[in-house]
Length: 112
Length: 115
Image (cartoon, rainbow over all chains, first blue to last red):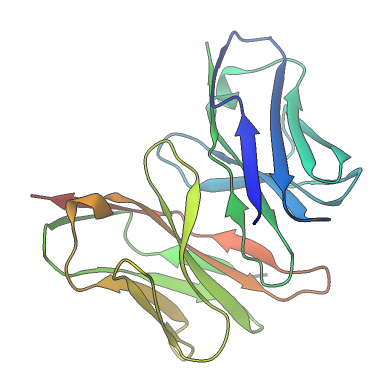
């Protein structure tokens, strides 16, 4: 069966520090991969998605970037964090057939 | 492009009462519809989905949703809620595009079940 994991689960970082969140999918090949963010009390905001290795589409211009170095690995990064980057980050994968997505456990980032 | 509107941001109910969480969508093409549930500090879990066939779909924990094409709705219902149903619920829609389906989420409805 397919599984998705993301880490770390919780992260507290100072303003201006770098960020790296990782997501790995197992049990499937060539998945579509997504990064979403939830700010406190808000809905889901799609940040990035990828349909293949090295292919990244950005939905919202911001302080973050994404990379897909391997078929089932998706990384969210920042060189210098802002206070506004705080939130709950969710990685997801899908086949692209029906749009159905499968989510990881989430990573809570607090920028101080 | 498609869009989703969840008409209620918060729904408080008492335990064992019925509940309806409303969802309307907009799309110029055929759609697939989903309800996801999110418990505090967790990822989203698929609750139920409509892909084709019967317009009434059910989950294993007593929720059901009905696809109404004429009213472009996919409301979520449960005849008797439990304390454990307290969570955020997201309605989502995808429409088949040449590059594969993309999922669009509503803003979410916080269901709070009180004793």
